[in-house]
Image 1 (cartoon, rainbow, N blue to C red):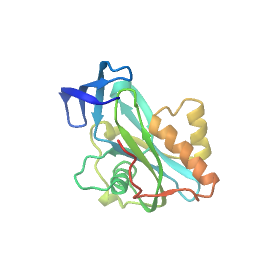
Image 2 (cartoon, rainbow, N blue to C red; image 1 turned 30 degrees about the horizontal axis):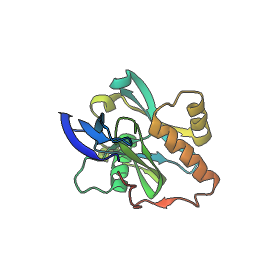
Image 3 (cartoon, rainbow, N blue to C red; image 1 turned 90 degrees about the vertical axis):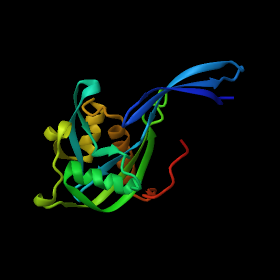
Length: 196
């Protein structure tokens, strides 16, 4: 049951592929399922000593608007570990480094049509990157804004609709839970990924 008996590739791009899988169903019939096969992503809840989180505001063309998000990006550098990718994104998007990184949560973003998984980390012990060493932002990142918001205010932004990006919602809720339990139940940054 649920065995893939055939697959047809419909599109192949840098970030994702679209395939139609033929899958056996519980009754024995075979059904077509369109699937977006995604490279995967990482995100970071960067929490400073004052209990503020780093949020970035970035234009997202598919939804046609700016969204408040976590620093995040694709797993697209060959051989780069997930925690290292998250720290790279933190540096590129927020001009920060972190002395401590823990795993917060793993999420399938849209499991009804995509296998995209994002791993969200908690970064603490933050430090500014010197101006002359900062990443030059281009394209949608060129007008990205960065802000630090108290974690409880960020949660209020989730519940009043100002934050609607899925990984930001999940990451901020997980960070609040971690904070409220004194960060005792965090998994190590290099914990194995769940099966995809």
